Image (cartoon, rainbow, N blue to C red; front, side, top):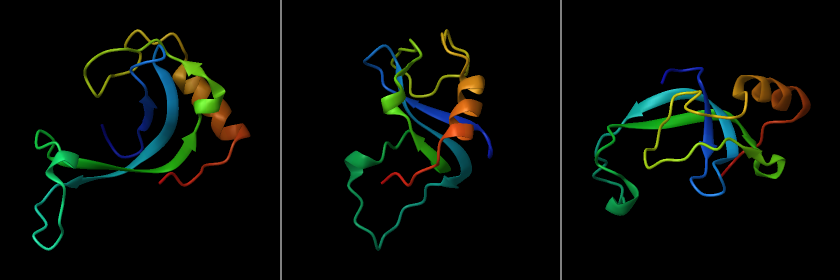
Length: 102
């Protein structure tokens, strides 16, 4: 994964429904923060980097069903996806507006 890549957040249930798409803006190396109280359950120690993204589109209402399912967190496109995600991305960006997702 690199800066500028488009990422799709896809649920494992619901036949792999896409719920958010965004652009990778940076990767941040995780470093312990002694002054911050971080719940260890929220940080999976197997990951050394945090993914920071921008230009997020909340698309759960569009009902894009990719049929991507699996136990892993990251898949490379097409990974048996039944939707043309690059084409879908262009259409969503053209007709929608990015939102802040908290």
